[in-house]
Length: 253
Image 1: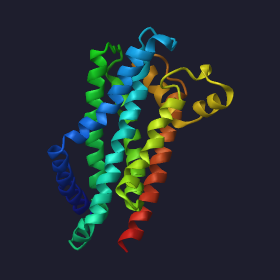
Image 2: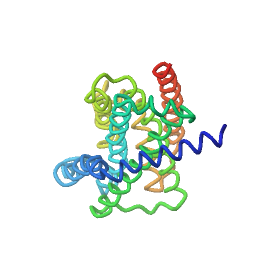
Image 3: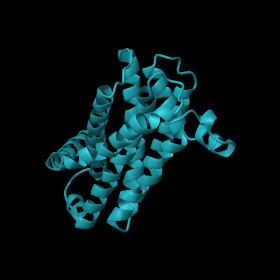
């Protein structure tokens, strides 16, 4: 049964990835907005922002990476919604395949597409002057956090794709997630914010994730931020996965 599931997921993931390769503009579009934000904040607004860092692009990049992921997962909800409406799910379910493999194929495709977008954004940041003395273990830790964050948000996207009534509704759910980094430590230190805003910023998931990644890049002690970041990512992932699977079962009964 396990072999059956992995084989079916691999085949369906290959199908989804082929769709991605035929529309590379999806990945490019996903990366354009975060890159535009990075250019705007570094070259237009950066001079007026006191981040406490010698290089604002170094301070900014962790938040931009999270915005890249939040932007990319909207396409997962969009593609899933189109598959639901086109009847392809019914055709898959008429075949002797593991039913959950259909969802996992979309999730893994999202992971691959977002990783490509993250690499593109990171390369642009390097051109803009981003530098890090972090070692291999720190980079692996950053990659692990970003992968976990991507999986957590992707399962949220699955819920949106399964429950949306329109194409616009399928992708619009990601807008609040894209805006969340703006009320965090992604662009400015939280201690510069007024009281209520600061309280929200310091107790929402993006701040701890951004702080953990930034500390890893700058070779600073990560303290409790990394554990809080992992707790947020795992918590969102577990809840979103459970809700997505429950929603999926209701849809296919």
